[in-house]
Length: 118
Image (tube, rainbow, N blue to C red):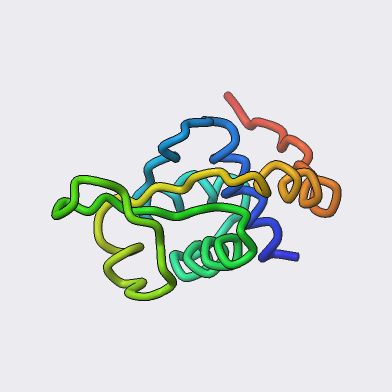
């Protein structure tokens, strides 16, 4: 269930800001956003969720290649360079929205937590 919650949180971020080039993240930046929905999420959790979504064709991770001047799609290798070094982008695919809708039925949005204020 936790894996699906992480996937759901990631996909919500991608769909919320549609851009054909994808949404740029650093691993730490992605973690800061996902932790709002999934407490105690680790970098490893984020990488594993992203890779699962990529293997299913639900999203396309890509990274800028300064040698070619274009974005290269993730190939499933060299995770250290891809995820832990600088920015990468996550792009929607035609399968993103249907999978997000399925996850929403399974894990659904969390009820809003009451805000504590003084």
